[in-house]
Length: 178
Image (cartoon, rainbow, N blue to C red; front, side):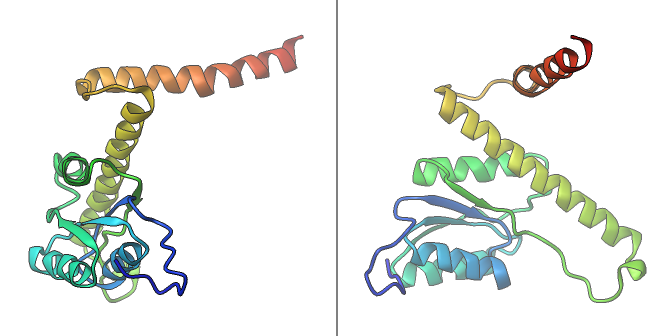
């Protein structure tokens, strides 16, 4: 592990980061920066070769990196990405939802297919964040294995209601009717 900091004090030692779209550009630079600060990095990209190049560069510089190539928009892939980090490095501390598309030209000139791809990407980013939040909830509440999805939705909905909606409703009621 290397650090540009002269004191050698790395800020992210033993943290685990997942970076989507890390095969090139901003994603690759982010992965390299986090690794230089001591993070163990899971590199994701659609392009396996590019992801392996990023991970190889990190490893050559003394960092730790795993590759989990795949499409964040695929229905089960966000969970696979989360599980890769947990299985490979024992947890997750940082996510960087960097995956994206770039098309040259004005937005009003984009095709329907490009808009659908962008919409699918946003759903994939959302799903990735949801699976990460479920991991955090399991970690915080000491649940060893995942629930079935229907129970997850029921519990997360009930939790949201109890923590956010119910108190706000009570506050509104007591402020306006008492």
